[in-house]
Length: 277
Image (tube, rainbow, N blue to C red):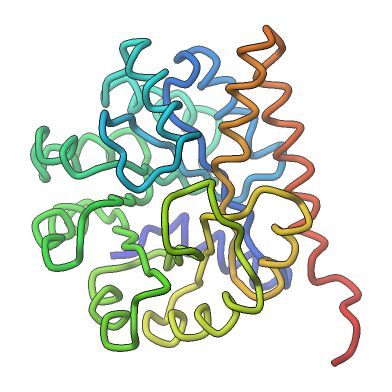
């Protein structure tokens, strides 16, 4: 089930003794050309794993920042095939960085699970996060993804007890995505003291590396989470740079990649010279 690129990347990072830095941006935001430049620049700026959103009109798991990104992308005419085109172009120059698509089930079922799986496999995608797909309804998609060796990354949340975590883990591969706060993206702040025991529970239930997302915007917060998790996911903070740069007519790509560099540096140095307990 698990895609080789994801396994290889987390094995490398474990050997290095550090957490993964995982970035999220919305495909087509603010436009396809700029989105591609950002995507292509992320690995050199420090992204270990990349999440690429495909827009949907009702992204119920997102806060205002990413909702507006989806709206900008849709207003620019972005379709799923356009986002797959971004992935295809990215893979021409990068064969090692894991690429995860993130979006909503309506878009997938509109295409059909098997057709969706084949299409994303053709462009070099490694995994999929479908925010509004509960594990009880994930069977057809999981089966289709297994057939093309792409990981389905189900979401674990603060309300997932041990039994629920085991259920979620059954069709999860690649890594476990732990949502650090109850609510939507970009609103609350993750607390490493609360996150740490939850990460251990999810790791035990899944047997997978655990990446923590939602509520992480600053280098300081990213470093704190990197000390207790196997990966740190940042999305809203990067999307905000896109929105602010576009509004001010600045170089959006440069702004985003500069933010990525600062966050990646914090994650990479988080476990260095930790004081003895």
